[in-house]
Image (cartoon, rainbow, N blue to C red; front, top):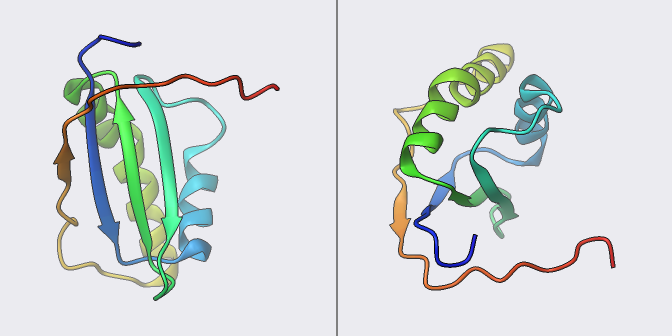
Length: 104
């Protein structure tokens, strides 16, 4: 991973942990192709901010089209939520990627 081109962004989303759990349930346990890391961070107002790192923008866009948007829109329909468009992605420049040992 280190030294390779990657695509990263920060995105503030108008949902809380309960809706996020519904989206994750709809995504299932199969890993998203091309995803390096996804962080869902709770803000003080109980909404979330995502920080995502993908192998490429193309992998990210493909995952959104094929899996993420269907899961999100399904969860929104379930709770009767109609967002006002998609939250913008603030693209980030990746300076370095440090890989740790999550099994330690």
